Image (cartoon, rainbow, N blue to C red; front, side, top):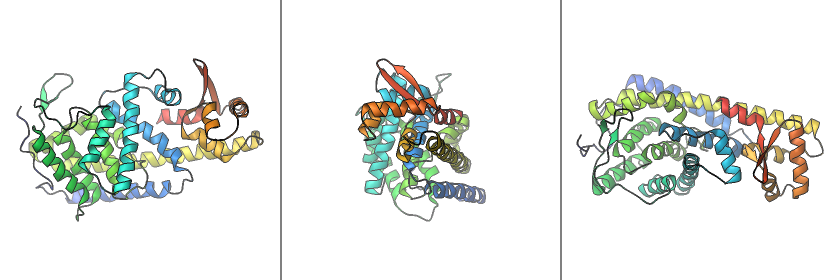
Length: 355
């Protein structure tokens, strides 16, 4: 299959605001606005952001068959030891996501250089833009070539420059429709040797932040894509072969609606769980209770005494008493990891696992 060197620049020459699309756009916009409004009511959004960012890193990597477990992820974050390759890739994803968030918040736009930085952090190398021809996307089962992206560094950079303009120049097209168009275009350009899918999904959240449709990175489409993975690839291909934009845009808009509602439900669940935990600890352990302590054990699933000491809660001996007391009332559960003892927030772990 020949390289798609005729990939058209944006905007697409097609009707991308059909009546069907606009009807779905209304639903998606409402769901997203409701999520944004609720997230602004949460006193410590770091709790929500930290939990969701890790779940997105896991789900987005899983689409590329990079599979790890929640338990491995949480333990690796707290111990930073014996990290298996798949878990390391997922943690790189979270790191790349945060790097992208910082860069876009600083600059107010999405650039080719930012895209490059994200991909380099994801892959932990500086392979950069594809220079050598021969890249092809294959069916994982049959090995058949299903798509050959544009070839040649100069052409790829021209396409990325055009995409950069589309991301950043204001038009009358709704940003959620532009997100769908941009996501297709990035995946069709496929500018890197590896990490294109994950980079593209990070760009989705960065674009929502840039457009101020969200003010924190809490909406991720990967969970929807996993549930509808075959449609994702089929509809991407339909644009390439048939210029069929409507079905693809509807797919992304439905993903935004579904994921916004799912995230809102999870956000409410986390807040309810934290409020209940605050009430329980205040009642049962009034001598050690502080709102800051409860918020801290909700920021990451696992923690250890040294983390609380570093945050200035108390000295090591006192911190150990805090953690043991929280274990006694079954808020935390201890686990020995080598010479260290780490503590898991049991109910938060179960809540995220069930999602």
